[in-house]
Length: 298
Ligand code: ATP
Image 1 (cartoon, helix red, strand yellow):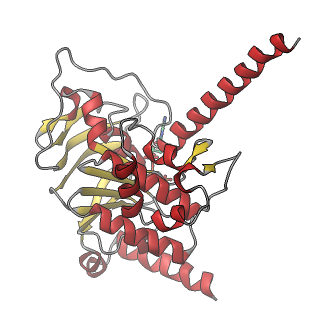
Image 2 (cartoon, rainbow, N blue to C red; image 1 turned 90 degrees about the vertical axis):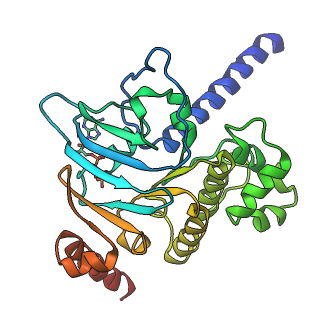
């Protein structure tokens, strides 16, 4: 009888592992809803990033026919700049991330990285160039070391430790009796939201991408953890181009440029101070959120 059950047990394990993997992928790519097939052009070359500039050039895009979400959107992110995309709910912020990752192709217009149209290069090379730090990171039921090294099976223990140090989670890991071999997730140690986020940051750092896409990276955290994580992200964003898709304005006020999106159009752009002086949509969103912050405190 045991012989009969063992394969079933195994199947259960395989199922749980796959399911956990899918959950993780879904969390990592919260940016995807229903990915549409995009394919590499025949003989497509790899993307070569020397200067990680990102350009949206007159991009028109809709998920469905006759309902455009982005209406000829153009903006430029210089190499090494830290920019943020803000705007009301449904403005198309996450859509920009999905297009940059090429889960979809625009109906017209182009998206360029370092001057190369992302539709003309291999998807593999495109995705290797962009690291995502997602909002909610779900971990695999495995060791903390595995979770950091995930996707880079060739990573050495030293490289994993370095990434953990850069993500400011190394002291925490060292404090665990089993260190990097500590099991985490449902079956093991439960990590806090901030710790999970740091594991996700370490995983991204190991990939060492020239472009970072921060997907509302700090929303589920308390204010102090949020500030600490924001500090870590600021540090690891240095020497990279980073694009933050943000709902909370407090974390992105020091971005080099803030792009304010409204109904699929670029409504305003500039630094925090410039946008406050402009006294438009951003200034309105800022004062509304400032009031909410005061209410939270009182
Ligand atoms: P939020 O701040 O609420 O996350 P957002 O600015 O990120 O909003 P998007 O997620 O980019 O907005 O969505 C923009 C528009 O596209 C919305 O009207 C949304 O309903 C629509 N949309 C998003 N994903 C899909 C999809 N897979 N199929 C059809 N429409 C979609």
